[in-house]
Length: 323
Image 1 (cartoon, rainbow, N blue to C red):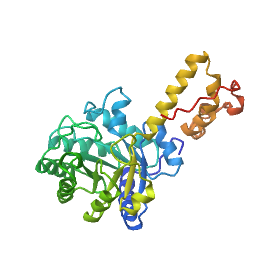
Image 2: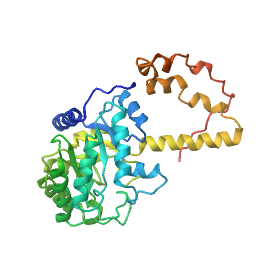
Image 3: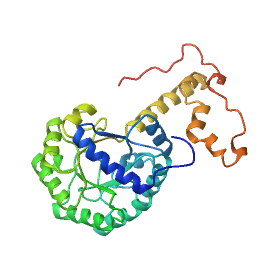
């Protein structure tokens, strides 16, 4: 997706996502939401045919140089979610942590995220301050407290299409049965979808999906506590939506690390140029040509393509790191 114009209104995206989730449950073909770590990356996500973009709290913390331990604010999350939601014609699902405080804070979180144009968000049942769902030492609030968070968010919703997902981190703390009981209680409180964090295997996803009348989300994060299942297997287990929250950030940061090492060693980036996104491709994603429809002076120049880049030094390709 490129260009300045966006075709879907936020409410249209919300209802489209609701219908798509129902279809995913009935067909066994889950929706796929890679994590957009920048607004521009959401356009690549759309161009590659994915169903939506996930906006990860861990990524928003990491890009600020912070650990995922509840340090980001509602304002920071809202601003980032607004930028990513505006950059492409995709539904967006946002990590809203615990709702940033008490139930009244969860209500305000709903108000601000809806105004930012997001399609949906999830609240979790951890205590404050929370931590990454794949770290040890998590603690969860009691069921009644989480139900108040969900009810506050639902009551503050101004668009009935906004998808409110409840995440439970209880699997690692209280065990599978307690996590499933919590999920049922959260659905009763008004949750539209359930996100069971850090399940042990496909069988556990299947049991969740069979026991609930709402869609189930699966988190396929790398280096976590669970196995990286393929989307077909997850669909067969009844999962309706799969997120890949940190995949793109990890790919990008891995490439940056290797590139900086080569630049430091060689004293030039010449060997790296073939691996770079070209200026022409970047301008295409940014929509220079579409903006010229408003002002011809915006894009009245030739863009150097890949063939005009300086040649790479032979034998200096980056070595793959298989760690």
